Length: 482
Ligand code: GLU
Image (cartoon, rainbow, N blue to C red; front, side, top):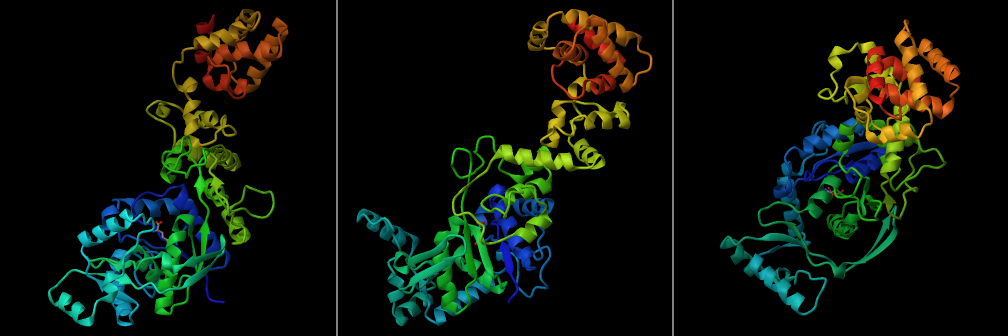
């Protein structure tokens, strides 16, 4: 069996987002499952649309996610497959376009933009919806071509579409039949000598020995054109598979404007998502492994990958599930890993960690290990530990619903003021004592103590919170609710 070689071929018109990450990731899993190669190459023929920094950012984010290329322009395959960036291959495309002319599978088109526009408008006026090139220049005589060339008339190169019916066996969508009559002769090399996408992609996939083209379904309409080019050269066609759309909760294609769903990988990284969790969740978009297990490592996904398990229907990007998966990965971190990771996200402008001991900070952070969905959420919890916090009127209202809360708070204050050894165990015993002395239990005991000590009705283990706030702060807080 020939080696499986798959590729992710982004156009640097933007940054890595959920959609193109899914394409990269599935190609990676497919290649790795079969011990094949995963290639990242850049499709930058549309020079005006290239965005500065997009390539670097794509690579950085792919590496962050653990989608590592075996070959790319940063790591070329000893150049035996040619260049990994289309803008460095213009000569190769031109040479091959000329070759197609020489075997009469392509021709020079001397039509000007004005002529083409006029032709297009005439077709629209006749009510033709699927407008296409008239094929005029395919009928030029050798002498007409010669004199056009002599007078240096600009030309593009068009592919001569043969009349045929294509039966495409898409390994995801099934069989797709396509009548080539629907296509006009399309441009493969523009007047500026730059190859068009459909031509360059075929040349690259051939040059790089790509065995499977796995991409989003928005490329289905390009596939017949590409297959015709393979056939014109007599090249073996790779297998094609088109993944269904990823949609948001409203059923629209996932985009920058998709409500609460973050779109770009960089946004997740900035919010403190773990790359392993993202890898896991994105692998489940439009694909599923056998069995119920959803939390899967990269190695497990590589070994479970099966190209027969892609879904034909759209997959919904579910932000709640993404968060849940991330929270599971955060819980599974060791304490050291969690602390190292979370510390990077502390907003040090709001929380001055410099004045605090490392040990104290670690204990505060660990209080929230089971709660955080992503690391940046730690900043929602730190205020009471670092800053002077006012108790809100809503919290006071909640306090007022607890009968005789005053007596609990008074007793708690008395006990706290006289506590000598500030230890968690002693604080736990102290809370028991307040219960015995006031006769209050459950919510009637804990809610007044929690609100009085931390100015908040929610939080992790009460004794831990009191211990880490420290005696002085707890006494200041109690004074606010009295
Ligand atoms: N450059 C194309 C894109 O970014 C990918 C083309 C392909 O996979 O064939 O959508």
